[in-house]
Length: 279
Ligand SMILES: [Zn+2]
Image (cartoon, rainbow, N blue to C red; front, top):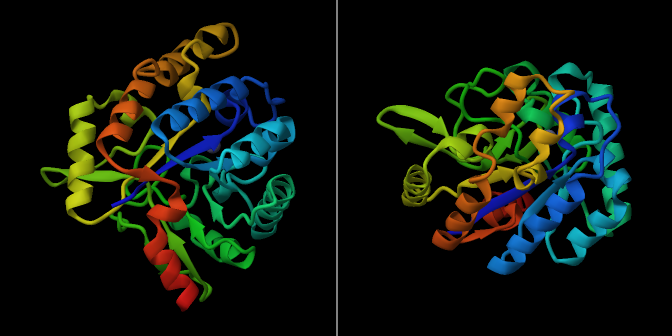
């Protein structure tokens, strides 16, 4: 069973604190650290690259593609999808897709929304994705958290009907069940805070259920001193929350990649993607 590894390539300050801020080039060194980690493990992953990030560092996008990784879209401007109109979302998706296709020469057909911003409010976004040539989406968080997600959403990647009558593969990031409660384990603060044995238990559970577990991570999780460097411009609580567990993150990823088989999402989703192409 191939589990899926994905990286959302973006600049922490612009994507997390201020969408209008110019991007720093800081994510170059940390993305290179991730590329080195993948090379060491001999595995390929999926890079969902933000359009703005591709414009800032086009040579980085070419480097990712040249290393044989799967390149897909994180949209253009890192705006929450539920705050956009259909036309605004269509424009954002088309701009990112054209930009990344020009840079890489590869077809872009996978997408992850900024901050998992597709939920009950805007399932029509799946129509816009299908209309703009996307065949899979990894944006619906399969449980409700403070900021995003749909409670009780089916956790396994599968082919779904969009509200307007289209079809797309929906691929929620990893979750597992503890007693009777579904919990997130695919990335972010949860992955940073769970002790590794819990993470391994979760992957064993998903594997038993025949369900690929999808990991999402960011360049900034490979940049342990970033929070300290923003001490003047980011409130203390935000820095604590965003900085917690950063140091241990790459070590946990290393162990997970040693213990289970990982690859790009196009491989982890091969079953439902071929169902879509046969439909
Ligand atoms: Zn993002």
